[in-house]
Image (tube, rainbow, N blue to C red; front, side, top):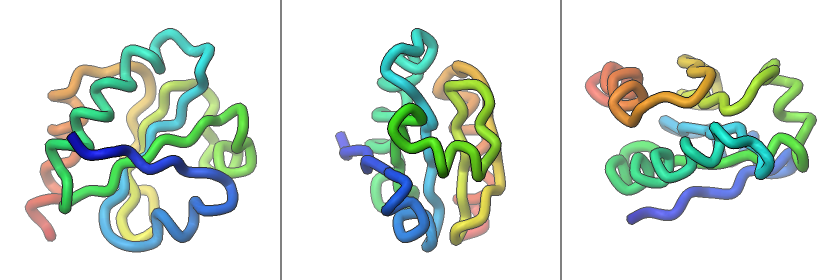
Length: 108
C-alpha cells in the first residue's frame, strides 16, 4: 500500500503542481471523513506511480480549503498540473472515485 502525502497550506502548491493529484479535504472529527479515509488509502496503493494522493486537514489548513471553496467535508478534488478538474463532495464508494479518475488516466 502506498502512503498518502500530508498536504498543508505551505506545501500545497508544490505538491499539486505536476501531474494528477487526488486530494482528500477532511477533519478528524468528521464521521464521513473517517469512512472515506481507508478508501483514499486504497486508491493511493492502486494508482501508485500514476496519481499522487494527499490528505489536507481543513482545521489546520484553512487557507487552501477556502481557496478551493471547500464548504463541506469530505471533499475530494482531483488536480491536473495544479488545476482542479474534478470535485467529489461527500462520502462515496471506491468505484465512484475510480470512475472519475479513469478519463484522466487514459489521457496520460
